Image 1 (cartoon, rainbow, N blue to C red):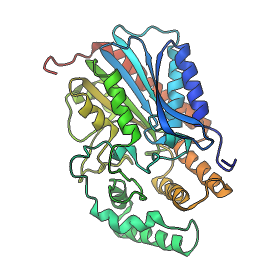
Image 2 (cartoon, rainbow, N blue to C red):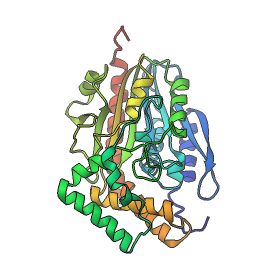
Image 3 (cartoon, helix red, strand yellow):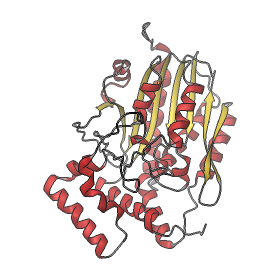
Image 4 (cartoon, rainbow, N blue to C red):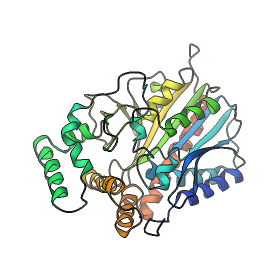
Length: 373
C-alpha cells in the first residue's frame, strides 16, 4: 500500500515489543492468527501471554484492542507492566494473563471497528435470539453513509445531525446512535449478524485459559470517552453480578458502576444503552468463576469532535482511497482522538492503569469465591 497510510505507530511494532517483553518476563505465549492481513500485507494475530502458573486459581486478565485503534494505549500498558513484572515474583496461586490486540485488524488498519465494520462491544450477543431493534437509528443512518467528505451532500448530512441535536440534545441523539444497530452493515456502531472473528477468538481464549479459575479480575482497556487525560475505572454489565460487591470493595469510590439497558443513562461518555459488551460476554462465559469485569476508559477529546472524526473515517472506508493523502490526514486525526501524541497524556494513563493493576494484584490472593459458585 502507498505511504499515504500512516506507518507509525503500527500493529507490527506493538506486537514485536509485546512478544519481546513477554518472553523476557518468562511468560508462555499462544498465537491466534487472523485470516486477513494489514495495510502492508503483514500477518495479523491476537497473542496471549500467561505470566505465572497457567493453572493458577486466581487470574488478573488484561485485554486490549477491543476497539482496534484504542489498542495502542492498551498495548503500551501491557508492554510496560510486563517489563515491570520481569524480576518480580507473583503472589501464590495468581497468574497474569494478557490478551494483546483482540481486534488486530482494527489496530493494523487504524479503525475502531473490525474487518466487517463491526463494533465488537455491540457483537457479544446470542445470535440465536432476536437482535436488538434500534428503530430510531433508521432516520439517522444516511448521516453515516454520506458519499462526500466535503460538499453539498456532507453539508446536508451535517444539517440533519445538527437538527436532531438541537431538538433532542447531544446526549439523547448519541444514546440512539451508540446503542448499536444490527441492520445496516455500512452504518456506525454496527453490531453484526453473527459473531465476528474476535468474538469467536475471545471465547476460544476463555475456554483455553480461564475456565479452571476460581477468582478473576478482567480489565478491558479503552480510550476516547470522558475528560482528557482522565482514566476512569468502570464495571459494566447488564445487571448486578455475583462478584460486584467485591469489585466495589476493592476500589471503593474510584469505581463507577454502569448497568446497561435501553433506558439507562450515564454521564461518563460511555454508551449506557448499548448491548453486547465484552464485560457481559465474560460474565456469561464464566458462570463458575467469581469474576469481576472492569473497563479502564481513558478520556481524550470532546465527544462531538471524536464523533466527527469517526464519521470521516467511515466515509474513507466506504467511499475514499486508502492510499492517498486524504486518507493519511483522516487516519492521523483518528489516531490523535484515541491515542493522543501528548506525552503527558500517555504518562498519566499509564500511571493510573498501573496503579489499578497493582491494587488488583495485591488483593487477588485475599478474595474468596463463594462455595456455591
